[in-house]
Image (tube, rainbow, N blue to C red):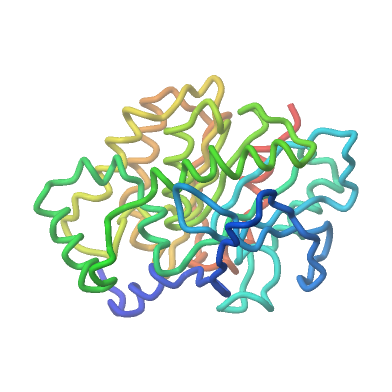
Amino acid sequence: MRLFNYFFVLMLLLNSCKEVKKNDINPSENKLVAKTLDIINLSSGTLKRIDSFPSKFARPRTVDIWLPSDYDKTKKYAVLYMHDGQMLFDAETTWNKQEWKVDEIVGSLLDSSKIKDCIVVAIWNHSDIRHTDYYPQKPFDLLPQKFKDSVFETAKKQFGTDFKGLNSDNYLKFIVEEVKPFIDSNFSVYTNSENTFIAGSSMGGLISMYALCEYPEVFGGAACLSTHWIGFAPQENSPVPESFFTYLAHNLPSPATHKIYFDYGTKTLDEFYLPYQHRVAEVLKLKGYDEYNSKNLKFEGHDHSENSWNQRFQIPVQFLLNKN
């Protein structure tokens, strides 16, 4: 298989969603307050922000909450949790001047009554630990020890002696045990799994898949765009992709009560995912999923970027949030 320039691929993995800034916790604050933002350019809705959401499990980070223009506290809303939150709304504030256009897409679907009422919770990443936050721990544990040792050795050289391994289990605890309770208590939302969803791309696709499998009682569906099946930089004969499919075969929750969406492009980093899409289909079939509760879509000519994801994001949003 033709390989990209290694440095280019590595930069995509580590910096695909760079943070704008880091935030510090103020220990004296006892109550979190989501403040309305007027510095973000939105096409619809309102954005509220917690600059530094404290956590026992993960590094504090910014959490944004997008509310539709007609948000009404007398109504109840479904919730879509999304990773890489700083990349979702305003290209003028992102490192690569691209965005998911979440406010445009979700706002338009709501205006045309194509999806149920919802809000979006955008959880920012920290670029230096994005990989360790998003790489699923249990599939990693399935890898041969020699391979894992080589990964950790490389990581220590790259990140220094502070590297302490993967943190994805704790990152999910941060979402489930800290962020979600705050959202449930402070916004007019449904709290059940039928109305709680999670989505992301690349490494964000992996952690969204992992969230659905680890917390099926919390999340009713996941959207995994350009899922990074190779886990790290492309390499031949890697055991990584099969570790994910083995994990999925044992842990995908019941298709009677859950939905899962996968997709992939054909250019740049996405072309490395093409050999594994048949395995996705095989696992979905094995677990009893069909076209009504799962998708595995190919987008010819799409690359590994927000500009490609925003061209098709309306598809998984409608799939997860359709009105029954």
